[in-house]
Length: 517
Length: 79
Image 1 (cartoon, rainbow over the protein chains, first blue to last red):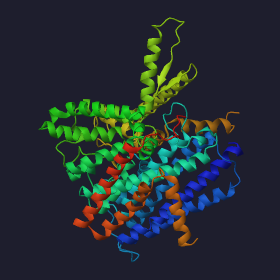
Image 2: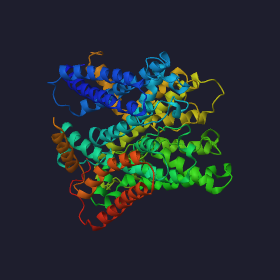
Image 3: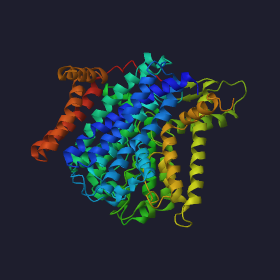
Image 4: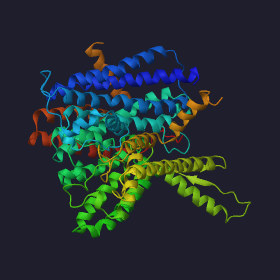
C-alpha cells in the first residue's frame, strides 16, 4: 500500500483506538458503582491496550495529509473491524478473570455463569463485539441477565456508539448522489475533503442522538422499567441495536405499554437523522416530503398489516397476532432486533409460519432510511431499483425522439446520473445477495443436517447481514458452528459498511499495494 | 484544563451544535440530569410528574415550533 494511503489511515485508526480505549477506561465507573471490583482490572487492561497502540499510530503518522473520500471509506472499513477486535477485550478479560479467580483476589469475584464463560473464547467475544458495534444485536450470551453489569453496560454502550458511527458513515463519508443522505451543512457538502464536514456533522448528530437517548430512557422508565433497564434499553433502542439486559428480550416483560413505547423510538431510529434535524428546526415538511420517510411509513403500514394477517391463524386472538406481528415487523424493518415473539410469549419466531418468516426476511433485507441507524440495503436503494426498473421498462414504449427522464426525490436525473445511480443501487443489492448466498452455503455445509429448515437459516443470515438481531434460535455459542460464527462476523461487518467501502479497501490493499503489479 | 473552562466548552458545544433553539438546548442539558435524578431518588409521584412533564413538554414544544415556523432552513441540499 502506498505511503500516502497508509499515513492518513494509520493516523485516523490511531485516534479511533484512542477514543475506544477512553470509552473502556471511562466505563470503569460502572463496576465501581455496582461493586463488581473484579471487572476493574479487566477494563483497565482492555482500555490501555488500544490507547497505547492508538497513541503509537497517531504519533507516528501525525503529519499525514487530510483524508479524501477514498481514505474515508478505507478508514471506515478497517476502523470498524479494528474497533470490534479491540472492543472484544472487555468481554475476554472479564470472562477470564471471573473464570480463573472465582472468589479470589479479594475482589468478590462471583462464580462465573455460563453466559460469561462463553466469552473466554476469543471468537465469541469478537462475535459479541462486532454484533454490538454494528448494531446487530445477535448474542452469544444465553442469559443476558446473568452477565455482570459491567458487560451489560459495555454491550449497550458499543451499540449506542456504533449507532452514531453509522449515521456519520452514511451522512458524511458515503454521502454521494443517490445515497439519499441530506448533507447537514450546505457549504461543506461541496468540499472533497471530508474532515470539516465530518466534524460539524458529528457534532450535530451527537446533539440529536443525546437528546433522543434521554427521551427514550425517560419514556421507558415512565412505562415501568427499572432505571438500569431503562438506560440500557433506551440506548440500544434509539441506536436500533437490540441488545437487552434481560433474558428473552422485550418479550420477557410481556407488557403492551413497554412495547407501545418502544415502537416510536425504533421508528425514530429508522428515520434519517438529518430529517430529525429539520423537524427540530421547525420544518415539518422535511418529515413528510422526504422520500425515504414516506416510503418508510408506507412499508411499515403495509408490512405490519401483511404480517398480522399471516400470523393471525397461529394465535388465539386477532389482537394478540396484531400485537406481535406489528412489533416484530417494526423491529425488523428498523433493524432494532428487539424480540417479543419469544418465551414467555405464546409463540416464538421459530414456530411462526414460513410465510411470516420470509416477510421478516424481506423487511430485514430492505431496512429503513439511509442516514439513520438502521441496516439492510436501505429504502433509497429499493426506491431507486423500483423506479429504475419502471423507467427502463417504460422506455421501450416511447418513440426514440422522446426525451425521457428519471425522477427521484424531486430530482431529475440526466442520462449520465440515472444509469449511474441505478447501477450503484443494483450493484449493492446484487452484492448483498451474493454475500447472503455465500453465508447460506457455509451454514448449510456446517450446521447439523435437518436440524434447521432453510427458511430459518435464511432468516438468521438476513438478520446478521442486515444488522437486525432477530434470532430464530440458530445463533448461540454451541448451536452456531465456528464457520458460522466467522461468516456472521463478516456478514455483520459487510452489512454495516454497505459493502462498497470494504471492496474499496480490498482493492486498495491488493491493487494499489502492488500485489498484482 | 480547569473545570470552569471545561463547562464553558461543553456549553459552547451544546449551543453551537443543535438546531439553534434555546428550548431544545435546555432539553438536551436537562435530560441527563433528570435521568440521574430518577436513578438517585427512585420512582415516586414527584419524579413521575417531572419525567412526564419533560416528555409532554418536548412534544408540545415541537408541535408549537413546527406550527409557527414558516420558512424551511436554507441548509438543505441533496448531495
